[in-house]
Length: 162
Image 1 (spheres, rainbow, N blue to C red):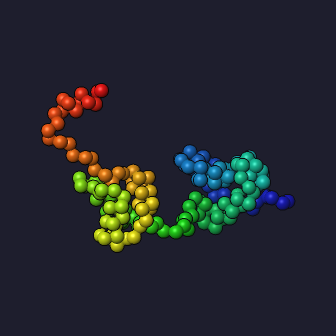
Image 2: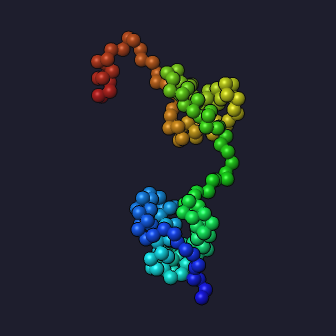
């Protein structure tokens, strides 16, 4: 009969329930749910399970192939992204974060670009530096302006209120 799977699921129904409760992300939940549906006979075929999970049959067959190959560990293993490496490596970003926390800070993003090239030997575009500082590190390159010693605290508070 087409669509009938030939797979021995090693885990018991109770173990699968426990694993399902313990998973926080949809990535692992869907895969364990597939095994649970097949183990409890709620889905007779892979096609039925695909309809219940809202996934394509081929996707479920890939999951089952990985389960056959290495068990639960292989099924729940995430693939490593194959994207290009970051323009500014992690070690540079950590030393950069330390420098941003210092009181003198930087004068702006252009100063950060110059510091990266001079001290760390990394050439980075202004746009790259801005994205990293502003969005990833959630920091600001500028330090607060100094307050004049001639100002009185009462005048500052009065100014803030009005």
